[in-house]
Amino acid sequence: MNKLLILDLDGTVRRPKSGAKFISDPLDQEIIPEAARAIAHYKSQGWLIVGATNQGGVAAGHKQLEDAITEQYQTLRLCPEITCIYFCPDYQGLHCWLCCINPEASSPIHTAWGWEYSGTYRKPGAGMLNAAIKNHLGFKSQEHQILFVGDRDEDKGAAESANVPFLWASDWWKSGDANYDTSKS
Image: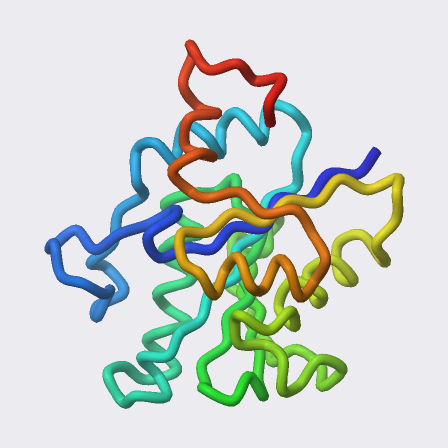
């Protein structure tokens, strides 16, 4: 069985080291310790792990697209268990970027994702989740186990729109606890 774990990033996996509300500098981020443990647990269970994040700061003019790309690469460096990150930099959900690090060359690769889900990439739209499922599993089936984890209502809405199970970050973090009953996840 193929297993795909899709993670929201801000507030679920990473947070600003500075204590600011949002990451404004690509280096001003750290992995949330509970998330690191949960990621390790899922990775040990054979899950493929990808990120999916809205990056409205680009559309709002708080950061440049290049900074958002660099931010995703920093997350991939801090948390190498994450295979790649999908992100939507606009409010209309028209565009999706995919950031990966080539494991053979340790070099960054980023590209704009296709137009198939244009208009639905921004969460609570299902575009990023559907792109991740198509790119990594080929299609949704009973043979696949898919889970989306997030910390905001728009994350839950994206999971509902994509018709995939959702778990709140605070509950998912418990899966990395040695005393947690892992049969629940």
